[in-house]
Image (cartoon, rainbow over all chains, first blue to last red; front, side, top):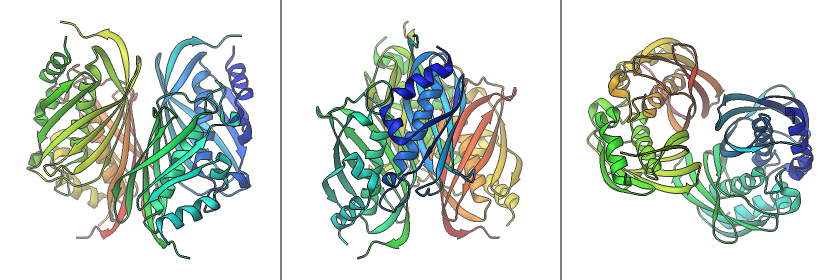
Length: 136
Length: 136
Length: 136
Length: 136
């Protein structure tokens, strides 16, 4: 399966990413770009975006990017720093940057940007690659 | 406002935590315990719980625990390690442990346990406390 | 090689841990306890312990604990939160707690305590286990 | 005090950074570049650079960069991913990138590069800024 086929397959079976309204913007081997629009039901008690939603967008980007190499990859550790509040109605874009593409481990930086191209969150994820291949 | 009043107020206004079905089990100054049940719409492309949902549960526990001291607190950095897959239908419990309760900064460890009391995720969060007080 | 033999072998060949004055207090499969005394040459510009030294103590504890299972293990990601300043002359103890002992990946929490049993730093480390065995 | 004066003052009083042989390459408000050469006494039991040394170099870069704004800043949380082994004799360069320069909190990414401009470690640090000013 090609990187795009893998990601389209993963996204089509990913109920929570679909609830979030995640759309695939770009995909290449090792990277992907996703976007989604913030809805009212995604806000927290301060009426701004719940941090768990921006994390989820980035975590989906991590899973998709890491799996494009054709082997099942699992998240080992992830961290996120929330830099700026996000309002309902805003569109968010998650852009991955593969920092290490090892045989067994991978490291990915994912930035989340708002409509004005301001960085609202910085995410870093570490994955472990299994031997299981993606195949039709 | 008491710790319980603050958390009940935050939870009742937190649309995303309510979508997740988060229930308040215990609250004291500096800590809280939350629980929720995993639904089909929260799963990812491997048909296990999306990592963003367990993060969201832990992130709500962080926000609630940190705000019990009576001042508005904001997340600075959070990290999570996913140790074990979670299936739809399982109940998860998030239990906080306050590791630092400073004037300006706080550190919280949050464990997520499944029905069998197995740890499925380890979360650590760092908050900054503002001068803004919680008051009726 | 037994867990103790592996750690004694690693420590005896570890020039930097010896410069730090690290001593092995306890070792068992999956865990270890180390201690060291803070010297003047380990302080930073505020004349308190440089954060890199407490990190180094914890990182050695991670390496030792992770390798006790008999296979070479490599650090993938580590994080540390500095909770309290440490003065020259103080003795520090690093105590590991194995949180996941998987076939391929492991997660370890390491606490650093001062003379008064106060926690001065919280460290979490993630390792990848190779196929290479420790053998005489 | 200017950014350069602050960093030169901090470095001249920082015994551990001087033991490491850290040199100041560049400094501007919010950022700095440091370098050092790896010595035999900095290696671990695998005869490669101990992870604590690359962490220490990055942690000094964090402290210097964060303090250039003229107020005392303290490390809250730091994490590092070791991507590639480093040999004795190699020169390392740490380059900071300020990701958030808030009134109270700051976020910095620091990359460590070897002689061949390969990234050997990724470090991210979060600081809290106090009210105490740097002044002569």
